[in-house]
Structures are given as structure tokens and as C-alpha cells.
Image (cartoon, rainbow, N blue to C red; front, side, top):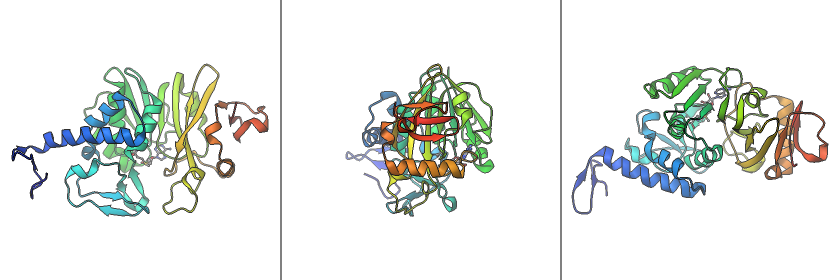
Length: 304
Ligand SMILES: C[S@@+](CC[C@H](N)C(=O)[O-])C[C@H]1O[C@@H](n2cnc3c(N)ncnc32)[C@H](O)[C@@H]1O
């Protein structure tokens, strides 16, 4: 129960300080997010339960996305409103948001970040999911968080200052050089996997990438979600790249990883559906057409 000053009052009448209250709310939120995601992963749940979302989203009240794509303002600056499966505005004029927690729970669990690993996040925004990744790789691991927008990169650096296992880079995540990565987590929509991401996957590394059409980031689209984009998990095993579709996806565009020809090919492939049948990425041109779901110069996503 919340009293008028929004201090939690227990049924017995005792008062609880804000931080203790939020720690409980965060634990309940983490459980709800995992249930909404259909994911059972105790480490991911613990990371969601530990990271304060309000630390990354500036002062409230906040604008949250409601059904239909519009924003509504939270009733007050109480951070409790952030502990729901809601998308929260970062730059509302650009429809640039802190993504939906259950979606990121699915994607981060698919990436399986382990203690001691190097995770690279491309499109880190203001850092909420960067902090979750940092917990999952632990102090022996590290996160390279790359953000293209200079203003956001500045906020990202401020929000994660003092976090010794995180390095912030302002720049284009398809062009910036980084050490071989166990996880590459792309948070903006590409029309094709950048060659640099495949090249920089360590042995056993996992690339999580949204492939999205030009309709993939707009609100109120007529296209069903799974015709606008899909998330893929691509793993490196020597020269082999086992791959699979994870879920439909809508993300704002990823700079420098979009071109017209790839977008047209992707839109046509998504119209066929069948992205869930993909099993492999090949980095060559001689895979027969009937085996390919989507093809680009020197690569394809294929059914076998
Ligand atoms: C949908 S926002 C996600 C922010 C963050 N992941 C979150 O959920 O809070 C995508 C971010 O990707 C960034 N971005 C787009 N293209 C990029 C690129 N090539 N390299 C690095 N960042 C990029 C955008 O500036 C934006 O901040």
C-alpha cells in the first residue's frame, strides 16, 4: 500500500524506506519479466532484480509507451512505475526508447553471457541493459558498450562511471574495432549482419542481431510484427555459423548497416515467413537458392 507521500506502508502500519521498498519491487518485477518472456534463467532474473532502472532514465516522471504506440506520462516520479514490462522514452521525438524488459530478457538469455566473457553491446543508449550484461559477465568479464549518438554516449558514460568492467565507446558499432567478443548484442535494426560482427566473434561467440525492414521501427504499422523484422542468434563454430531466429523484432535503424538492396531482399524474405526454419549462416555464394531464406553478396541465411 502507498501512503499519500508514496512511502510504503505495510498492512501492520510500519514504514519502509524507499530503497528497501524498491529492492522488493525489483525482485517481483524480475520474476514477472521472466514469466512474460517465457524464460527460466536464474542469473538473468537476478540481474534484472539487481539493476536500478531509474538510474539510467533520468528524473521522472517518465513517458512510457502504451498500446497503439503513443506515450503516457507516469503519474509521479516514483520509480515503481518503471518496474513493469514497459518501454520508456529516452528521446521521444525520435521514438528512441529504453527497450521492453521481457524482450531483452529473451535476447540476453539467448546470448548466454557467462562469467569472465567479453560482451559487446551495439546501441547501448543510456546503459540499462549494459549494466545487466555487466552483472552477467561479472568482474572477471567485461562489456564494451558502443553508442553512435554523442549525447547518449555522454549519458551512458556518466551512468556507468565507476563500473570498472564496462568500456564506453562513442561511434559506429559496425566500424569501431573491438577485441574478439563472446557476445555481440545489437540493439538497432540492420538489413544484414555486418561482416565486422561475424569477423569479431570469438570461437563459440554468439551474435544477437535484429534484421529489420524500413517498416521495422515505425509506430502504427499495418504490417504484422513478424513481417517487419526478426531477431537472429548466430554462433561461430570454427568456419561454421549455426543460426536461428529468436522472435519478431522492431528496432530503430542501425547506422551504416542498412542498404536498399539488402532491405528489399529482407522484406521479401520476411513476406515468405519461414525465418524460424533458418539453421545456418554461410559466408559464401554457392549455396543453392532453394536452401536460402535470405541471400546477400558473400553470405546467406539458410534452412540447412
Ligand atoms: C532502440 S535504442 C536502444 C537503446 C538501449 N539498448 C535501451 O534499450 O535502452 C538503439 C540505439 O542504437 C544506437 N545506434 C544506432 N546505430 C548504431 C551504430 N551503428 N552503432 C552504435 N549505436 C548505434 C542509437 O543511437 C540508439 O541509441
